[in-house]
Length: 250
Image (cartoon, rainbow, N blue to C red):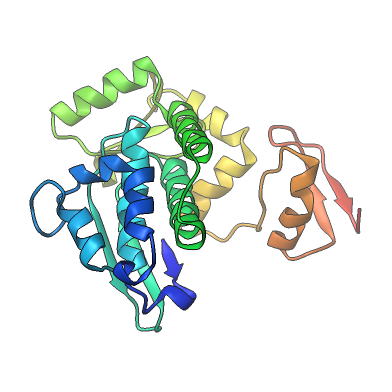
């Protein structure tokens, strides 16, 4: 996560009135974070003595995921060549969960800086949202069993984020599965060809130029999507059909 600390860039946590009390009240479980001191409570001792906000947001993003049932712990924060801009790296089990956790961590810390607190209702909502995102990203039972066996055998794997496909291995040794279906049949190719966005993503990842586009599911998302693709005119078509409509404006 690329983070602009703005007016907080030179303010240490010890210089922000009530920040230590606010963050320990909102997330008392941060006491389990060892951080560089290497002992229980090590991170909170650094907050009390003074540390920068980027470092705090890193730990909050990790802890929110832990509270939602995802065991993560790795994180690093480094300043970039641009003053005030930090790169915050933290572990996650799902990309959507990681993105949400980062945004929620910023909201939480900003609220404590401005108001000295973060409401229990907002925190509970964040945790529930993270749990829901975790459930959406979870592998099915068949896929999970195959992936677990691959890990036991030392076979690397990754989610292709397309039609719930999993890639096992790399290069000439790679295989792809979808639940219990394997790439030894043509069905995965047929499934992928029916998914316009998934096909574009696979081609884009391989370095092949594809038209810029995005998927929208709600009318409210239309304006931002039009801006994302560069404005009108646009082509709109169903995700899994061949109908096309070219629109000069809406």
